[in-house]
Length: 109
Figure (cartoon, rainbow, N blue to C red):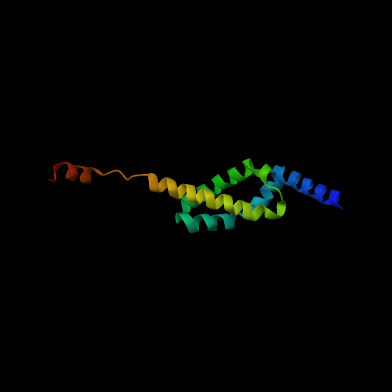
């Protein structure tokens, strides 16, 4: 019995390593991933970009996933982490002064 569970687990891992199987899993999750990304980022273009980033990260880290049943929560966690990274990046950026503001800053006492 224990061997059957172990074999099932290994078969699941092999399925996740297969590009076609992994891709079919992702295609069923795209709308959910976009919704999560958009709820954090509030920008359509950035949300699409983050979905692509999370998909790439999931593909690269797929060997770390232990069970197929935990694929969706694992994928959503990657998505949330990518969103948080993007929000941190945006907060680090200091907007530059435009020409008018720069001129006013120089000449105003």
